[in-house]
Structure formats: structure tokens, C-alpha cells
Length: 337
Image (tube, rainbow, N blue to C red):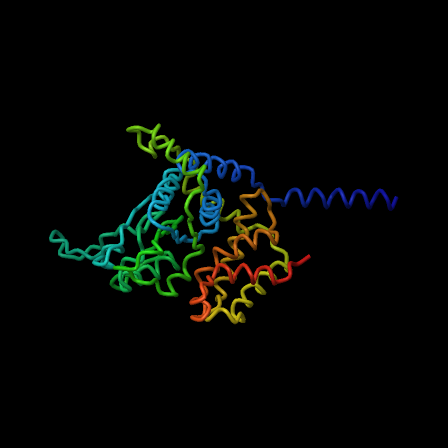
């Protein structure tokens, strides 16, 4: 009798666990479809595409860094084509004013009242090209909208429609006519994604595709995969991904180590810990799991932390980068068993 009861209890527990598992099937199908559409134009860069998809699922902003010509802008455009949401592109220049982005109040002669005319930031996916070309005043205009998804103009608050994602690009090499992004703004980007040059075989394939393209546009045949409602649903789904207590402690230890590392002048803030948590859930989701593993946290840590820490001047002169230091920290922190 005891054996029968034990078996019944185990069966019941299995059913309960099965019923409470998150159904990630539709999400995985949509992720695969988006990847296929992007791969019709972009050669390689699979890691970057995964990170962009994780950013969408984690409701976070992305900073794309790379030299000119490595498909930063076209990748953002491609992503917007696969999503049935609003899209705006803003080219940052030294003479750009905050009102050019946020909008401004215009006097209406008909009713003798001021009316607020929304700027290009009022959309769902915003591509900011060469974000480091605008002065600090214009960059500061993005603080509120990136963090709180709202804008305050003349004492009135305007909420932005969800989903809202900023993808900004910058060239790390060119210094003339650029302004360094303030740390407070960098901290608002979930990921900083560094795009490298393609390999030889990838470069050959890029040239072949361009040769065969002739007069056809690169983005003409891209299909729309996800709606705004589906994106919001998947974002809510990803928040339910399970994370064990020992993995939460693992994230905390990684971030604490950035504050105690002798090679770093500035460590990461608690916002970075939350960002790693959210991003690791996104990585787990696109890999078909409803639970986070240490590998998900490792994959999230570098793009989350590399722009949030500052290397000491001595180590910077030696050519040591923040990415190298973060990778060393991840290797030294014990993986929970």
C-alpha cells in the first residue's frame, strides 16, 4: 500500500511540474524564423544576433560598437523589418538638440494654445546612429526615456508605448567630432555588443551575395515575424524563467568582484546585477530552457559588464581592456554546483 501511495504521489508531483513548466515552443519558432530572415542578408555574426534577440526578450537597450562598414545599421534595420512595430532612425550630429529627439511645444493659432508635437523617439524600435556625435545636453535627453520609458516636457509626462527598445551605434576608432558617453547613460544599456571584422570565408560570401543582388534591395524580401503584442507576451514569459538561489549568489559574486578588482577603477552597480539576471533568463529562453544555468550567466556577464566598468589608467596604458578583466573575473569565481 505504501508503495502504491508513493507512486501516486510521484505521479502527481510530475504532473504538477509538467503543468507549471513554461511553454517556450512558439517563442523558439519565432526566434528561429527571425534568425533565418536576418541570415539572408547578414553573414555570420550569430553571437550578435542572439544578443539582440535576448535584449528584446529582456526589454533592454543595446549599444553596437564597431568600425564603419561592419553592418551595425543594417542589422538594426533588418531586426525592425522582422518586427511589426514602429521604427525610427535618428542620426546624431553635433548640432542636434534635445527637442529634435523628444519633440517640442508648438503654438496653435486656431485655439491659441500650445500643442506638443512628438519627436522621433515616440516609436517602438529606435535606431540612434553614431550616438557619440551628439553633445552631452542631447545625450542627457535620453536618460529618462531609456530608463523610465517616459518623457517629461513642460511639466507633463508622456508615456511611450511598449515595447520600447533603443539600438545605438558608435565607432570606437574615430575621435574627432565625438563626445564620450557619460557613465550614467552607458549604464542604461543592457548590452554593449562589439562587432568584429568578418573572417575570410565570410568576406567572400558577402561579396558573392552583393554581386548576385544586382539592383534588388537587401531588405525587400524580409518577412515580418513578431507583432508588438507577441513581443510583450514573450517578455512577460521570460520573466518567469526559474533561477536557483545559488545562481543568484553567483551573479552577485561576479559583480562584487568587479568592485574589488585591482585592475578596475570603477566596478559595476546593482543595476548590472539585475541586468545579468534578466539577460541570463533571455539566453535560457532562446535555448529552449525554462531555467537558468551558469553558462547563461557567463554569456550574459561580458556584454552586460564591459561598458559598466572603468579600467585603471595604468592597466589601460598596458593595453588591457575591460572585456579581458571581466573574463578573468568570471574564470576566478567558483561555479555553483
